[in-house]
Image (cartoon, rainbow, N blue to C red; front, side, top):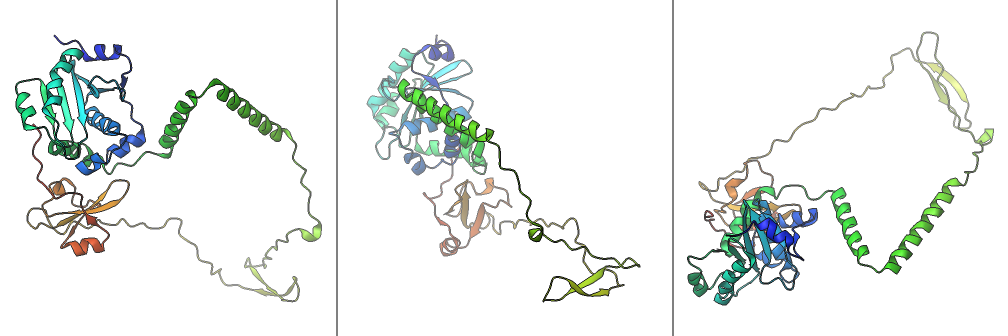
Length: 344
């Protein structure tokens, strides 16, 4: 009987609980198409983190392994006292061979897990698929992986990206990790320079500032006062261009014509224009504005996720033809539209 996954994996060395920064989470939340998954770099390590992100969103606790010496395991999952091992294969055209599939039962036995999951951006060879029937092995191939990522990420693509505070915290964390890897001599030099600059700032704040000197009388600003007549009206001053003194006084008995501006200005709320067409009754080219990057793509008529957005969504538009879409700044989507299949 398999032991509790959490108890087993936390005892093993060099395996850590999945930790993603706010910037990584914002990046992964905009990935749901196969081409975008294939662009994840770092020799497959980023793809493994992306798969771990998807499982974490499904309620699993996720552990990662080192890049080398992982014994054929990329991720460990634990949920409801059941544990699973995960292999991730970021292939563009090659299929996962039957030899890789045949290794999974041994890994399950060695890790005392309840099953294995193989996630790939391509597919599994037919021979390996047939051999795995009846065994504790689950395959997630390209099409199902796209549908899974779409279901999780499409609802969060309009969420705001990491705030400035989160970005600064991530930068400080990365700087701290870099600093901890440096030799002791460099740390001592850093602390010495920091103390030196702190002392300079302290000394600069203790130096008294020079006293303020009043300007001479001739340089002081002259602020005229408006005389008021006996009946309370303002007396206007008519100045002569040759000097600064008033040369004539005229009294105005009329009320002041100065307009009083309202304290609040009326505001109007723009009413969003509903989509002119429906995806089923009158299919159209669907223009989509994606996430924080504001990338603009248009999809073929019948795009399966069209009706998952509200009618007044500002990121979805309809176009009669591709020329109209490209004139509005939209470019063709990365893949043809396809009707998603329900996940088993």
